[in-house]
Length: 104
Image: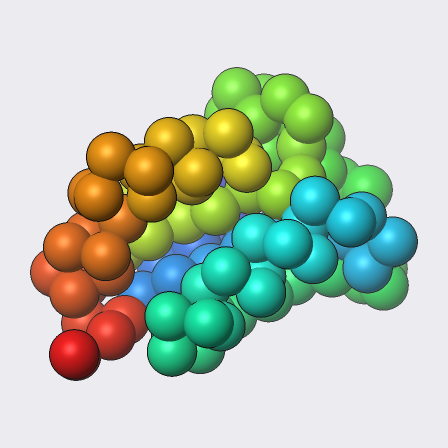
């Protein structure tokens, strides 16, 4: 049930970010996507009643630390390091175009 909840939430939009409002790395990742013109669904785990369980689910999926956890096209991309690696090797924008998160 728990993993299904994460999967359902992750597939609601082309880009979904699980975050914490107090996390500066999360803020940087959200800003990066917004700068590209992406309008991600953002779930602030520290502001949600079920946030603690979602955080544990993300850790079970292999997110370490649990946030930021970025899903593109319903697939787990990973955290800040994975997102930045994709960006630096010029794979991130084509991936975002492929799932319809950006059109330019």
